[in-house]
Length: 132
Image (cartoon, rainbow, N blue to C red; front, side, top):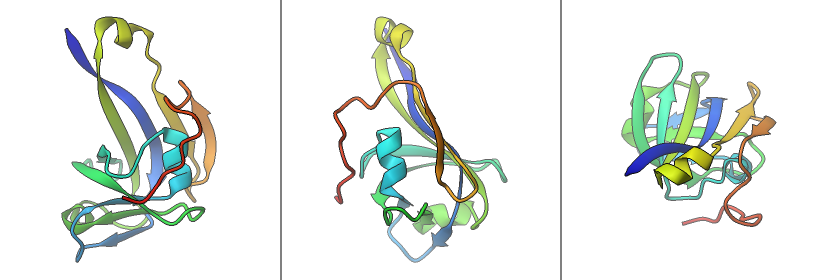
């Protein structure tokens, strides 16, 4: 059996901007992506803590070191700057993999600066987020 398990999460990040007139996606500071082991183009689920909205989109690189969390295109309708969001990735795993798995959890402050990283180390050696 294969189960879909949480792989990584950026917990309670603050939306810094929205841009409706864009193709779609979420732009995230590469420092946060590196910490959470998320790569550009990867599917993410975005949960808005303020409104309860949930959406699925893909990641684009934001500007490194800025704490940027910007929802673009239709996703921009589901948040406002200042809203808190949880950004989650999932992965299919066998029962054995799931039993041994610990998700990577990145905690941030209100400026989206990393305050703690919990759980499993990234799956690859110090991989830096690259533009797609």
